[in-house]
Image 1 (cartoon, protein in one colour):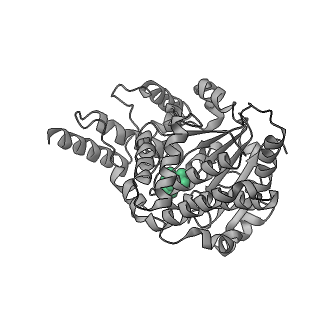
Image 2 (cartoon, rainbow, N blue to C red):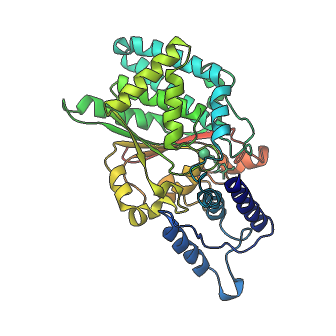
Image 3 (cartoon, protein in one colour):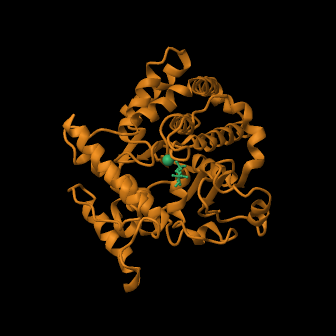
Length: 390
Ligand SMILES: O=P(O)(O)OC[C@H]1O[C@](O)(CO)[C@@H](O)[C@@H]1O
Ligand SMILES: [Mn+2]
């Protein structure tokens, strides 16, 4: 009870600082990333003129303060032992999973039926199935909890039936490039060689299921031989996947009463045990830095990503960090916005929730702006945006 009281009082202090636009203060509790955060704070300070004083909540870059808020929430928890490993968002993440049961059953059933036929599929059929599962993973990104302020945003209908209707909302569709890349790898690879796809995960619950389904298909179709996943080290942006969420969800799926769901769960567990699925933790994903800084700030992670044949970045926050969350013109090429971040061929799979979008046709963004003022933030539109050799 004492620890809870302490955490609550630290959290109300944080809320007060935020609501009254106080200066952003250094982190105090020692943790693996405390020094890097405090250095970053100094860097933000150095960007200001003398007369501007300290960085403040309402006047600093949104990406920075939003990340800082989640990091401060974590600080309130680690300062309050014995509840210092408590995940304040766990309950809502789990709820999202339970509320999406019907869709999860539909997806797992679809996957299991597909896997039974996968060897006999013609090239074109395989390609279509690949595109379908990519789209499911894209629309799975609608279900994050930070956009809804933690309110329920689960998937209640069967998304497979909606894919055709949702197609017009895909603003950039580079999935052909992904197919060309992976099917060439499949054709040209030597017997024992590896084709590695890395997935930088976003939200737990329904979205994570869609990502695991895609990852399972990539192996079964031999489009890849290894999948590497990256999650968050600390609770992040409400619904983001931590290692606990990852393991918890696979365990839940495995113990489902539904035959095809539990088959998926058992298969996923054995993929992890045999090392064909690998989960990585790295503190960089919960730092405020944009990804073009990765090779300097986290060279080990950059080197790891360079081993991939393709990296899939899920979700909106990853997109903001890929593009530095700048006010780019809508028609600026994605490659340019990446600002030198090219560890391997990569693709952002993201529904639009924040006011940034690049790589559109000339006039496309302006047209949307005129007809639907909230097109950038409502999560209604999506992109598959690829960067790499064509
Ligand atoms: O889970 P996702 O797709 O990264 O979405 C998170 C997004 O939600 C917000 O927290 C609120 O819109 C954005 O700041 C952030 O980019
Ligand atoms: Mn998220």
